[in-house]
Image (cartoon, rainbow, N blue to C red):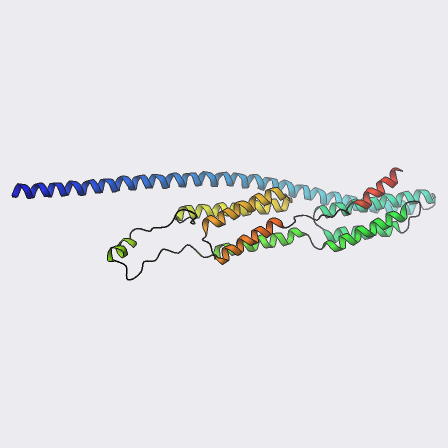
Length: 304
């Protein structure tokens, strides 16, 4: 009986050792899998950061271009002032010369208005159009009446444009970024009080969650996903400043994907996804078929 008892004890110890070794192997395999996922997410985050730096450089280039445009607009204003001085000096040179100078002045003002519209300055463009209309009122000749009518139509279109649509899009994008952290988080699965004792005990050790279509639950992956979503928001803002509709739509698509991956389905999350769809449909620049028609007609008049 002593040998039989010893044999039973050895068999139990061997079985327990085997189970412990299997648990260690499974834990190491799971840890290696998590490390691989974290490394992959870090690589993706680094790639997104490189893209962000590249877009930052592009944004700086766009700002430099805007500064050049402002300097050019200032130069155009100075040239307009010089033209007015020349008109005053050449008042006795003949009606034909004065008319030509006024038409040139009107062309400079219309070009200034077009450049103002490109940078979203509707008020500055309306002022330039008003100055051009005042100049054309003092010009007589064939084709001037049609030019005045075209300018009046274009001024009406500019007055109906309203503010720059990028301002509203920028505000809605900021509201989306501010509302995202307030979304409901993924709740831990609850165990009923009348469940068997072994289920309640296992619920304190094992957390069972569905993986198909469920939000990311691992804290490290959630942190990396939120950082990637912040990068995508920065890319969307950079595309908005460049008025790049393709890049802006792509960034919103990736933001929508991160929103679905990091937060569970809820009325608040669905509302944010609807806001993203509305942003994708919003225009980023001022656009109307009548804009620039007066300048084109004036240049044809000058060529003739």
